Length: 439
Image (cartoon, rainbow, N blue to C red; front, side):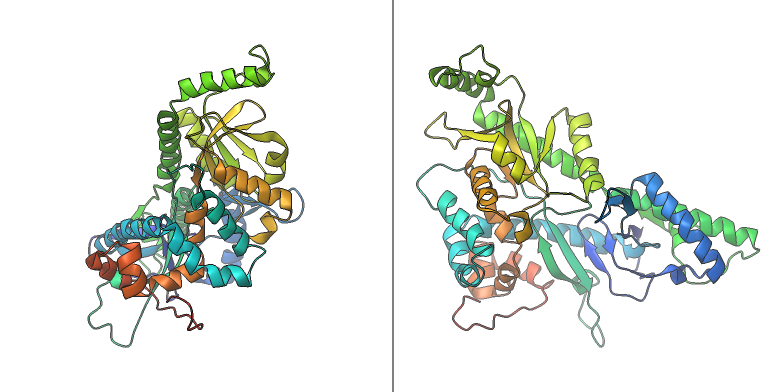
């Protein structure tokens, strides 16, 4: 991860490496301590200091083995980008959101487009498509509200002469993620890390009589020590919790929760639980269910988001694995015209199911796990993402977007060719090797 140094004028790239820009305002690329132009001995000493700063800020993950923690992969310098260029890319994100949501809600197209992929990967893609068919192409009511937290990744394209390309159009999309988009919580902290690196370099150079050295480093300038550039702090740590909270409020209003609570109690009384039983009442307010992996590593990033949901929006959240939910979650069919209410531990009504797992086959190792995933999709909870949104993260769907005439214009933008052209200029062309498939 890396922050952005924004300038009002032209684009400057602080390192001669391919960079990936994502919508969190972070950059993802790797380079070594040598980029700071420090002597080897000083660089080695700084490594420990910078590692300590990561721990102080909370830029950490759980280790893959054992119970320890380690620092997240991050950069030592920000990327410099013009404000106009960055703003244009942020505007393009609204086109991505529209294209993904329109395509996801065309359930028949989604099923047909992934038919061959599902057949070749029946253990994972096939089962996801099967959930799509059962829930969204069946006869029972489903939750129409969907919460999308997407991340689009770009690489900066350089051709031989760059003629006819604006600065923003040089950024080409290489991936769109619609499920479990990581590091929205930790990205804002990278700015503080880069500020620390900048201050250290400035003070060290001054202490060693290296004042005003033109070594190409961007960190000290971006930190404000040498003037000129200002670091932009990502807003993802505020925006994502706000979106989750908004979804909870939308669900509460849609479900008429107070009336739903009464209907639930009456239903439980009729089925034998009784109004005096804890299982017969819904005393808890609507909650956010965070579906996590077994032995989750990225807890710091997840808590950075969910603690804001709790502290700033006063909404309760719980973490559960699919295995735990298989034992503790039940669906309650209260209104035949509404999807069933999901209740966890007999007391927590689920307003939002926020998936930080289920995006790789290993997250769904058993039939019980798949049955639980199906139950969540059938429930009235707003899913982040829903199965339709989840399927848009597949490379096959991104390849289909490259088909302007048959997919991007009629499906993704419902006939708006202008929007399709504006988005397509950021595409890296992708092609199907199967002539029988759409696209």
